[in-house]
Length: 183
Image 1 (tube, helix red, strand yellow):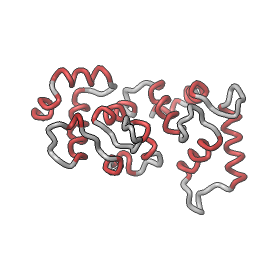
Image 2: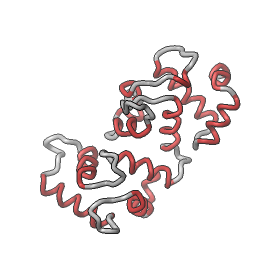
Image 3: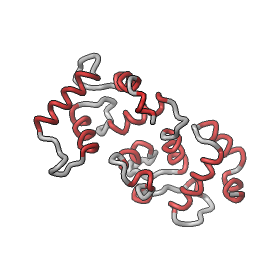
Image 4: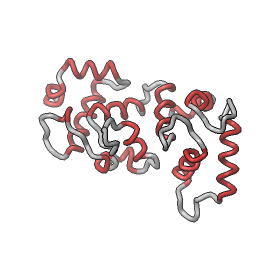
C-alpha cells in the first residue's frame, strides 16, 4: 500500500477525501482496483481512461441492470463512450458510498434513469426503467397494457405539477418517502 499512497501523493489523497464521501483507505483501494482495470502497471494512472467494457467486469456492476447507464452518467469522456478516468471512478464510488447523502444518491439515480438525458423522466424513460428492472424476456416483459398502467400509476404518484414528466425535485420528493432507497 505504501507505493500506492506515494503514487497518489499525500496532498492529492487528502483532496480526494475532501471531495468525496470516501475514506483514505477506500481511495487507496479504488486506486489499486482502477490500476488493475487498466491492465498494466501505469505510472500515470491519473490520466488514463478505463474502457467501459473493463469497468463492467467489476463484480459490483456485473449484475446491475443499469451498469451501462452508470458508466455513461459518470464518464467525462467527450465521446460519451462510458470510459472512466480515476476521478470519474472516484465520483461513481463516492455516489454509491454508504456515506453519500440522500440528495447525492437521488441526484445520480435520477440521471441514471433519465435515459435521454433531457432532465426529466418521461414515458420513454419510465418504460426503459421498468424494462431494466423486469428484464425483457418473454416471461418477464410486461404487456403493452400493463406497461401503460404502471407508467400511469408512477406518474399519478410522482408527477406533482401534472406535466406528464417527473423532474428531479419531484423524484427527490418521492424518494424522501422511501427510507429503503438509501440502502
